[in-house]
Length: 312
Image (tube, rainbow, N blue to C red):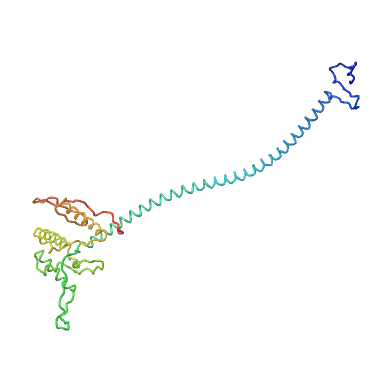
């Protein structure tokens, strides 16, 4: 049995740890003193603090480099953003200027279009004035005349289409019958006349119209009224097939407008909305909606300024 440990007489029992000894294996075991433990603890704490500081310093250095790199990139990005902002402001000003210029150009274009339309209307009106003495006769049959100088092999005379002089005689004859004048008087009213050129797109068999320029515009107005009355009487006597229609020759714009008015007249008559109607110069649709005696024509619609589209 090992000997009991003895207390030191010089030191209190609780000031220092007990020291045990083993007499059998000559090995001794000692306890660490508080001061030594504190020293060890302080050393370990210093090592830990040094390690932590080193780690923090290393991380801080890495973070510092990253921050510097990010700051450099941020400066580049900021520079690009500032340049983009400046460019955006410049482009915004340019867009504003372009919008203003576009608005001005649109306004100028509208003015130019309006001026062009006004000029076209003035030209059309002048053309209509120049053509005021020119009438178009539709429905006068074409005739052929024997050629006195040539004969066929069988001895018969060759037939030639009517010449300008023949056309003048035919027109004067038709006019004399309607106006109750002699052929010579009717012919003296016309300065010149001719048949219209053949239309290759026309598939019907109606005779070519006769274009006639009158000496006096008052005669042309008289002829228009006379033939309109004559046709009305012919319609009432079921002799409409023999009617000859007379129209005022007008410019291309007015021609389209008169055609529009005539289509409307045809529609109104077909639906029995009106009794009769005609298109007065330049493109005024006059209608009569009553069969009563003394009923007068009245303006249905004025197509004289109707917008014209030549592409339709």
